[in-house]
Length: 133
Image 1 (tube, rainbow, N blue to C red):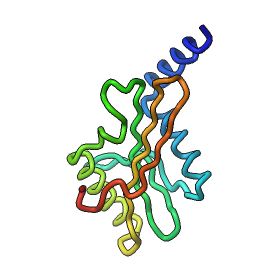
Image 2: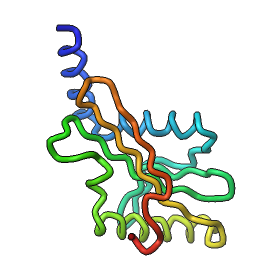
Image 3: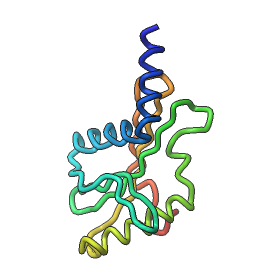
């Protein structure tokens, strides 16, 4: 019974602020791995980037995908070619506006599966390149 209540609470929390629980979890994971979080939810006309971080000399743009069930596949599978292109365009705008044109860019995906009530987190470093593939 407690597990069911916890699952319902987690579901309600995600509906109230979509992505906020998962993005917070993703940021904590990244920080534990030595990343410095630069910005969350960067928005521009080309799209949105969930998390911008610094890791070594690279600026890392992270797409966070959450799933409450596995019926639609894993979260990272939802990052389509079109979504990757929008992320790359937004990353270029972010980089240009911050004077980061000369720094290496990397695109990661963090997939969070909540189907068991406890988060299962997977980090895909370099999930796609600057051409969206």
